[in-house]
Image (tube, rainbow, N blue to C red):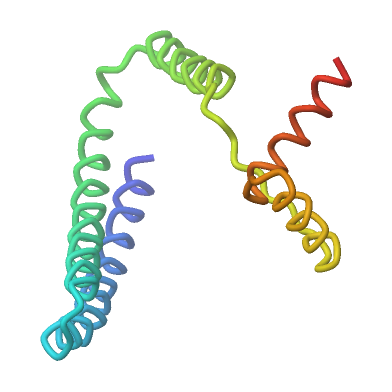
Length: 145
């Protein structure tokens, strides 16, 4: 196990170095575009590229740290504790997924003539098309209950 984790850590380190330089290389033209235009968006893109490059390097460092820590912990870790931790983390993930009550975004595609009819209905009711679709959906839901 330790040889495999060390090998995987080395592979990640080997791939992250070129990825870092590619990302930084892509960010330089964006920075140049920022200096030649008045748009601040390009500077935000540049910062995003740099942060992503730093994250790539941190992934390599973290993989190295995890592989060496796993070697040390392999001798000390109690198997029942590991099983308990695995079930606890799985339970937390499932609980979070089931209790997520944030509104879900649903996209619907319409034919052009159907959308035009919806626009006309929305104009008659002084609503936007989005508000009309929400109203129709909620009324259908209340009819089905």
